Length: 231
Figure 1 (cartoon, rainbow, N blue to C red):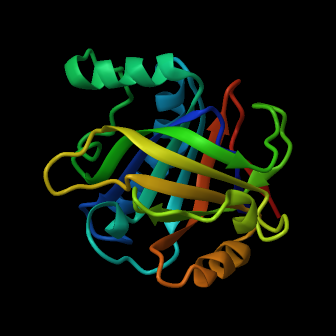
Figure 2 (cartoon, one colour):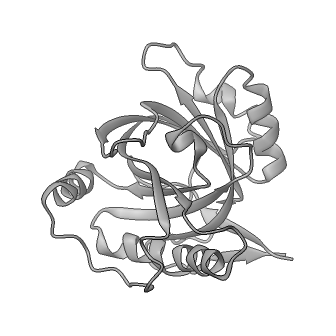
Figure 3 (cartoon, helix red, strand yellow):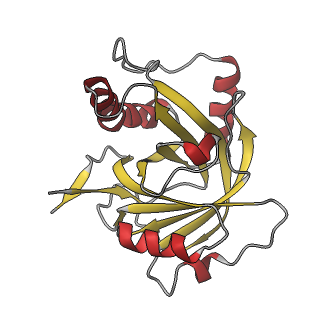
């Protein structure tokens, strides 16, 4: 058995996308869609968008609750370096032209259902990150904690539980890209963990808070870095 590890989320901005499949889980279509997204699509998004430096795809471990992003099966998180990359993506999203991605007829993208989408600015960070392409510490799981814009959240260093969570970032939504019926958190903490157990323990400690645990399914960074696996 191998476990996928993803590069730590890089850059000072973030493009976040939450999705579900519109085909039956376990079907051949589902498996092809899942593999295509992890093996092909996230790498293409990274290469076709200037300023995008890391890509991490996670599959939800905790039970789905609510609607929009809170009900999504998958999250794709793209670290972006600099304001220019985020603004260029926002402008292209509004008026085109769209990047040319590989197609998987007849599955992609009609078999993928959007649950939420947004562009974020990182407003705080705790913990160290290796340089892109260094092959050093990587994450096996992620915790997303959605926060209200009017609350006074705990400092990120406290959430790291004395270093048991290697890295944490807080992100604020700056461009809402949602269509009707989808949603994204206004403010969210993203905590990178070395194991699903550590991520689940932290999520359980956040009682009364909407915490979502994701197992890392795929990840890559710039320069091109193959998906890394460990026994």
